[in-house]
Image 1 (cartoon, helix red, strand yellow):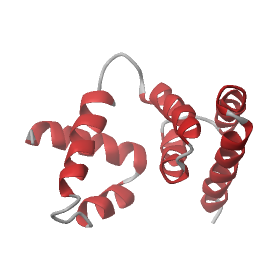
Image 2 (cartoon, one colour):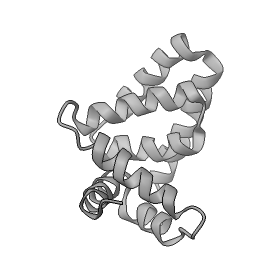
Image 3 (cartoon, one colour):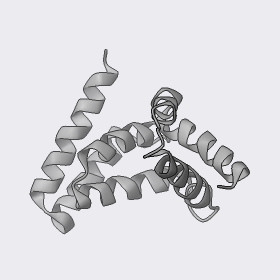
Image 4 (cartoon, one colour):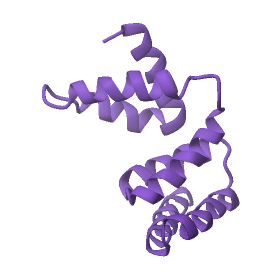
Length: 125
């Protein structure tokens, strides 16, 4: 593991997903899943998210579409929060899911709308 890359990735991961969630994930790592936490933090959050070609907002929009296509509600919930943190509006999130309905299927988009609503409603508390 490259310590500098891990630290840069950790900072980006915290900025997008929130420190509470990330710190809990890192603290909960054990001998079995720690290598996965390190891999994701270093390669996903530093090597990809910190590349200059796209801004974080655009990366968030892409993730919402891809996670809808893959029907991954747990990850989608995290990335809806991340998208909001990156300045994506609810209206833009809605448009991503409508677009995904056509290209990925209506059931996948309906699940994404449902998941996003949970995140929106939790923010009202």
